[in-house]
View 1 (cartoon, helix red, strand yellow):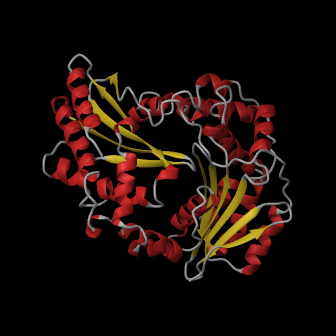
View 2 (tube, rainbow, N blue to C red):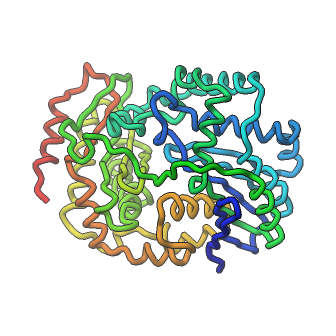
View 3 (cartoon, one colour):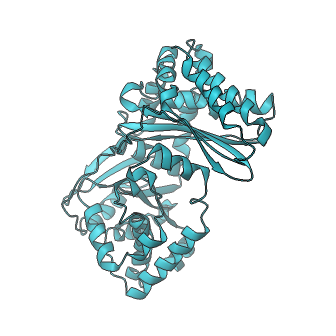
Length: 428
């Protein structure tokens, strides 16, 4: 099969292509290394605002015809802002590739919008903030504790006040800082020809990139990271939800083992939390989790909702499962890797998933592979001993933040603290 090919254009833009001629679709993404992690408190939310403004700006450059063209040709144009990057993407059938090129190249253009458009978008984003559950969610509450005192404790949307301060001059100045050489790259997947690539390159080379600070995806580290003296944090609510977060030192965790641990605990039909806590005991129906990773640190987190009276049992079982992982090396069959090995080849059938996964893994996190086959080989090399080392490194009491939303009047804090103390007292 094909593997990733790198093209560096005259103006310094890197374009990575991973072709699959067998597909009928193509997917182009433009990534910018920017986000709330790089924002000051004063400018919090400006990256997300820029994402929205770029969409309006592209429409303006196309004479207001963007939306009708998308519908007419069955093309999708979207964007997402993360803590460490923005992704703009255009996807559709391969016959629409040149239209996709026209759209994605305009993402790099200066913002030239009338004040009325900026104010209209400002009102929309304020409504998004108002309607969002981010302010009150357990994830936001937990992130504010885990990343206390750093920009990662901020929300991606920003606040009503920070958004109010954005104007065209500030937005364009910020865009120039972000859209600089080394911070912008494109990733192409699916079906396209050499002629298609030349057309895209010709459009991109007309765009100007500035010199600026290159972002390396190194996260700011909270003073409490790896030394959590207070593990339990409670927020009042009329329901009971728990979120466990464990600090990760990425330099001490063997490559890919955090993904294998996630699958063992949360990912599959036989995952330990699902079997033990949902199937056997019915403590919850569903459990959700994530592994937030940067080059230097990360956070292994999961959350679930239980009845108020079951909270103590749920905490005990959770910590017991994690303790067992640290006591013995798992068998090869327990190291669930199929999603990253056999099933990984399904990425060839999905231009969108292949695009995001390889762009993020290889050019934001600097993974060493450049093809699905190389990725599979790396995951196949993960041993049970590697997984054991990772479990002992991650699931330490000094890495634990347990955030709970519950009725404080009915919650026995001291009982929960005693359960956590037992976890602390366990010797590795």
